[in-house]
Length: 299
Ligand SMILES: C/C(=C\C(=O)SCCNC(=O)CCNC(=O)[C@H](O)C(C)(C)COP(=O)(O)OP(=O)(O)OC[C@H]1O[C@@H](n2cnc3c(N)ncnc32)[C@H](O)[C@@H]1OP(=O)(O)O)C(=O)O
Image (cartoon, rainbow, N blue to C red; front, side, top):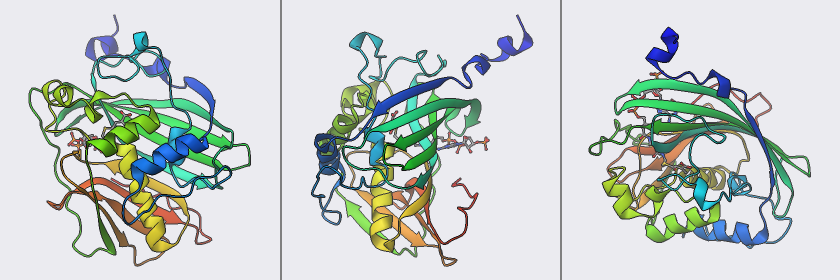
């Protein structure tokens, strides 16, 4: 046995694994997502075939329909299929970096190539964790391309809730909106994404097994709402969206969607937040100013 395997499992065999999927967002699926993410300040779209897909709605285009026998205890497909069999059982959507080139449309055929880029063990304030970085390239039949890095984190089941540190929201904001959060919105987003992760709808499981105080608000839903507000307030079309979900948000408190314009222009720092004043998701949206998108990441 090598020294490496005595220390920690080696996942190098998983790096470079690929998965290709075909999908798309039908009018019916778009309507489901529309109803999940809309609110008073972001009214529902009139969905019709050919409508330009709002940013990040392609995340519902490749919903997975795995047999019940392949589902793990948490409601996600069990590890060891496309993703490596990590020794951690608590999954969270941690963040990503999305680059947009062109647009997708309702009803358009989309193809996604996913590649496992890295498995990185870390130790944070909440304990040991493994980040899985997956690169996705989504291509539309009409020429749009979205390239993204997705980071999923796996952690131990805690004995009690250990919140990560709080990142304060700046006082000077360009906008600060209140979005009603509740079980119904979480259920609707889970349904539209066919995401059976129990932390989003099964309160006894969320509290007793994963030890959250309440149901957990989906990271991708927060991202979808944050970028929608940024586009509405700036009137700009994003070329890049980088984000981290830095603290879990819960279904029993309304969510803030906030933004602070970068005085240098070309970007806005955005996020979701609690009414106690800290970020859930912390992100940056950049738009085309003629220059290349920056190499800056949200940390
Ligand atoms: C859908 C879906 C699932 C979900 O939607 S789950 C809900 C959405 N996700 C969340 O609510 C995650 C909330 N975030 C956290 O709970 C914490 O940020 C987290 C991920 C537990 C980490 O907190 P820690 O305090 O333990 O970590 P540190 O800040 O001490 O950092 C340790 C190292 O990790 C790096 N790191 C931290 N956060 C991220 C991140 N979001 N993305 C990438 N890397 C991250 C950090 O830089 C440190 O690295 P060093 O190299 O400096 O050690 C579904 O499942 O489908």
